[in-house]
Length: 138
Image (cartoon, rainbow, N blue to C red):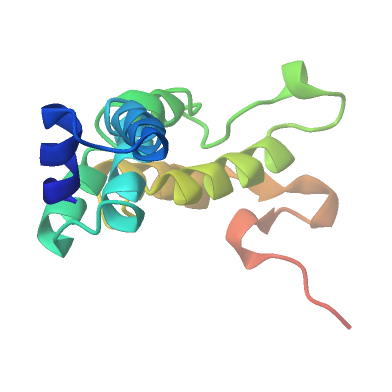
């Protein structure tokens, strides 16, 4: 990848490579949640470099913003997100989004968020079943 970027900046690349380079530069100049995946999948950077970038997701950018929106009661969303939601489905979708963005589940920020969900969130219609207990298929 570094050779490609050297050619890109020296001006000796075919037109399609210039478009690819512009897209790659755009991805690398974006949020850590995008950047670490571009580094891994498109640049094939070293695992340690990718891991260091991925560790930033919970601390800055979209990942940090989403984590900061969590209620002290453990949920995201609530009545503003639809009648009867109480944050259950919004929390489910938010946790999936955080996983997809690449928040390290062992990070201090993720552990705090999960701890809040475990401590506070229950399914009242299901006899106050803890959020992570889930449903059982019969």
